Length: 204
Image (tube, rainbow, N blue to C red; front, side):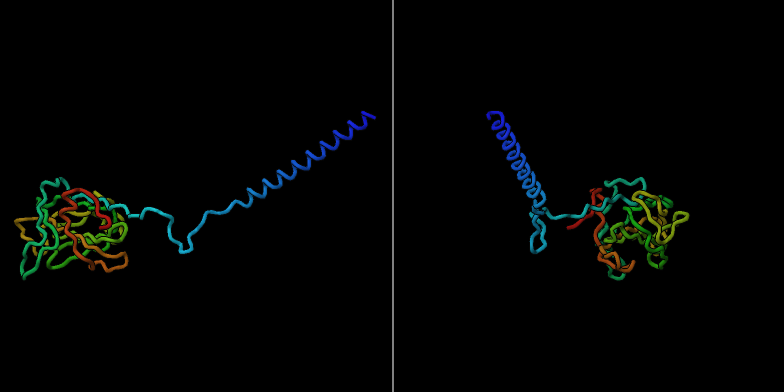
């Protein structure tokens, strides 16, 4: 009979459609699940990436009220006993505030015959030691291990140590060092071009 044949054809078509649909979705699921992970070089090297450079360490002139044009490059000037001046001097009136030249930690408060009252400050990344000498006094409450921010007052200018009392000034030195190095170890770097340019000190 025609209606029976038509019914069988509809049922057969529906069955075939259901089977094909199931096969499609099972196959599609397997393809998505088997999506390969990003390839990693056998050597572990980065994939065509630009070399990552550390950000420059921002620095400011460590004496309040002094502009870059007022600085004098006294680096490498001759000193007593045949020494070379591995720092710069910033002459200002006695009691002028001294500020932290960059973010970091007070590593050592030290008094010596030559430098007088001094501060050694390690930079935030540990790669530099900042040395402030011939100070009149420390900021009240300043202590070793204390974190300081760039531009924060840490002392006042004086003429302690072997400085001429008639010419009070800040003796400022930068030493390249390592995070685990001693507070008085490092290689001197001329601060003048850094301070005069009011720039940053990053990788060479």
